Amino acid sequence: MKNLISVIICTHNPRRDYLDRVLNSLKSQTLSKEEWEFLLIDNASERVLSKEIDITWHPKARHIREENLGLTAARIRAFRESVNEIIVFVDDDNVIEENYLKNTAEILQLNPYIGAIGGKSIAEFETEPEYWFHELGISLGCRDLGEEIKVCSWTQKDIENKKYPDFAPIGAGLVLRKTAFATYFQRIQNNIDGLSLGRTGKKLTSGEDNDIVMTLLESGWSIGYFPQLKLTHLIPKNRLTKEYLAGIKRAINRSWVQVLDMHGIRPWKKISRWTLLPRKLKAFFIYQAWKNEASYILWQGACGIFEGQANLFL
Image (cartoon, helix red, strand yellow):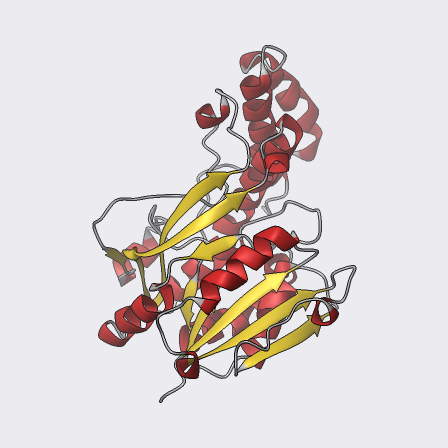
């Protein structure tokens, strides 16, 4: 049978019980193992994963050690190592449904103009979030956009007046056509700003997935949301703390300003760095950051926007 898909897990110091559930979901795929390869990219974990994690259950599995820390570095390595036209990035906390790979292959075979797709990512919380969590607008890589298929491409007019599609694929379960991913790879490998967008160790920077999506749209590819692609996103309790959520809100907003600007979208004006402190102090009172956890986290998000604006070039 034709080898169609490269399934990639990029992981750094994974939580083993979560990773075991992810691996079990791969073992249960209805698509024959003869039709996909499996690469486990150990991104500079403290313990060498090839010595601890058995992937011999798959006939086309490989352990790959990437010493350059960071999600972008791990994905670039995956691009170089994978041999198939379809790449499926499965995070080390993504439990994919049994038809995920079969559905992926069918969708891309029927839609040759689509370069990237995603689907539903349903949260499974280790502990129930606090009552104020849903006020924050932080998805933590989870979403359910309903049962309607959504597809987007940018015409020349769209490129001149770009708007990021709200149903664009996210990192959880991200599917890419390798020929489309190559356009991103060619642009990013010597782009310092782009290389800095992905998560690196404990740093919460983000924006890499948005960068990939916009690069593909600018290159003439379509992107889509397909609800038949479903996964469970495992959310540990340490990602629901005030400290973590404040850090991720700030980092996401700062990166959002940066990545939009990289693609010629600037809804915010450039601000002087010396104005950061007074702006943050003013926002502290506007958001009443002392009042409760949600107010504090939203204030941190505003600080991230200010920092992004200060980093813009004239």
